Length: 197
Image 1 (cartoon, rainbow, N blue to C red):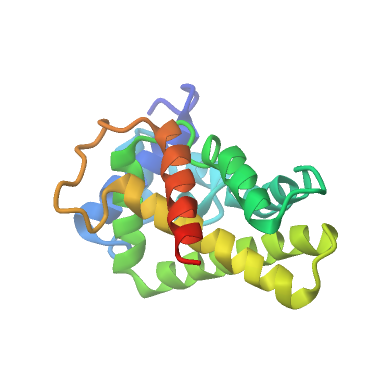
Image 2: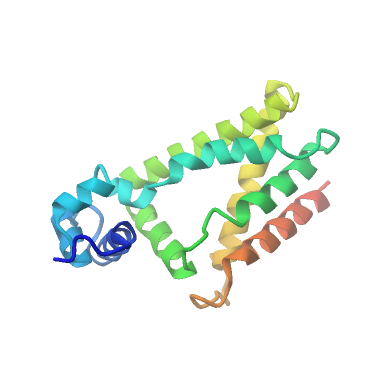
C-alpha cells in the first residue's frame, strides 16, 4: 500500500466520502476507508481520530476565522456592512480546493445521518457564537450581537444553498460554478435581505 504518497489526508477524505455516499455512514468502517484510499488503518489514525472527523477535519479553524472576519472591518461600518465584508473574506476561503460535487455529496451524507447532523449543528452554533463574539468586540450589546450573528449565519447558509443549486429546478452541474462565485451569491443574498426592510 502506498502509505507515504503525498495527499494521504485528502485521499482518505475522498475515499470516506465516497463510501459514506455509497453504503451509508454507519455501515462504513475505518478499514474500508483506508483500503479504498490505498492506505493502512494506522495511516488513517495519523490523520483522523475517527471516521466522523474525516468529514469535519480542519473546521475547528472556522470560528476564530469568523471572529477575525467580523473584527477586521473599520469601526465606522454598520453591522450589515461588516457582515458583507466578512462574507466576502470568508467566501473566498471556506471551500477552497473543494469541488461543488464534493460539497454537495458531503452535505447529503451529513443530512442522511442523525449523528452527523447533530455534529453539523454544533459546528454552526460554534460559528454563530464566534461571530457574536466578534460583534461584541466591536461594541454591540449581547442582543444586538446575537441578532447580527444569526443574520450573518443565515445569509451565509442561504448563499451556500443557492451556490450549490439546492432547491433550484435548474441546478448547476458539478464544476460549472467556480467556488469564488459564492461571494457573488452572498452579496446578492444580503441585498435581498436589505430589500425586505
